[in-house]
Image (cartoon, rainbow, N blue to C red; front, top):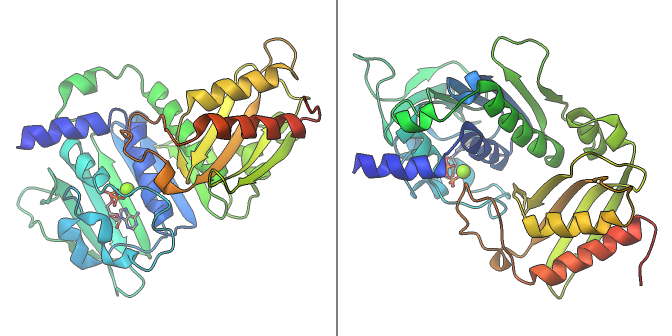
Amino acid sequence: EDVVNKIAAGEIIVAPMHALKELIENAVDAGSTSLEILVKDGGLKLLQITDNGCGINKDDLPILCERFTTSKLKAFEDLQSIGTYGFRGEALASISHIAHLTVTTKTADSSCAWKAHYEGGKLAPAKPGQGADPKACAGRQGTQIAVEDLFYNVPTRRRAFRSASEEYAKIADQVGRYAVHCKGVAFSCKKHGEAGAGIAVPVNATVKDRIRIVHNSAIANELVEVELENVQYGFKIDGLVSSANYSGKKTTLLLFINHRSVDSSAIKKAVEQTYSNFLPKGGKPFVYLSLEINPARVDVNVHPTKREVNFLNEDEIIELLCDEIRMRLGKVDT
Ligand code: ADP
Ligand code: MG
């Protein structure tokens, strides 16, 4: 049974960035306005994320890493964000099967913080000889999740990683995406032991500021807004896309569907095609899009590592989007 859990976990979490993406989504779901991320060895030694969200009730800690049972944890019920992110209840469970997981958390009405350690889906002693129960400790409201020695028990996976800096680059890319999208949330992301470097986005930064910080001014100075709402297909799109004055070496597509970072090669292809009429040969755009769509119309059962998303009336929606971009770029094709 444990082997099965380990294999399942290894399919969900293929690289450190997959674990981190889930942890970021959890922290944002918890209503956090600050996320601090610390990475050691490309995330293989340590992935740590500290948030200031609602925290986890002490009573929920024993079942936190059980698969599929955690979606209705109590501290969470009154949060409006329910329904915006998918709830599968298996991220922490999966991580606990392939890493050493430590959760330190405090809710508003708890007088102290609680620290719990997990192995294989269950509470476990942090050190030999200690008890497995959560331990009271000092701490601020919010949650800190520390994932240590990812894939320590999956040697084949561990061996597949060549370079920590490559894994860090993927992590920074993912953090950058959420840092652009999550208005009202401060982000920091650092490599352990390296002062200064990394991502630092202040809480009040506008989306444009966020793009300037995560990407650069050349892009941030050449953005136009896209805004589109459609009743027939039940969707809304907001975004910032580069104007015809900007021409990059490769397409940057930051795509969020219902506030989750996803990939869509169909959207990417259509957008590149649209821009090809406006940019010098080989020039590529920067495109940030937040698509909100009736969840019933989105295929939510996509595998976590298969971030390609599918939704109903994809072709029609993409066409409307490209019309909007064409219009905003200033040349209406009819
Ligand atoms: P899911 O998010 O699909 O429910 P997870 O394994 O990612 O499953 O998380 C399990 C539960 O743990 C969440 O539903 C939430 O109640 C709680 N949780 C996880 N991370 C946090 C966090 N940073 N702050 C508050 N609660 C959290
Ligand atoms: Mg989650």
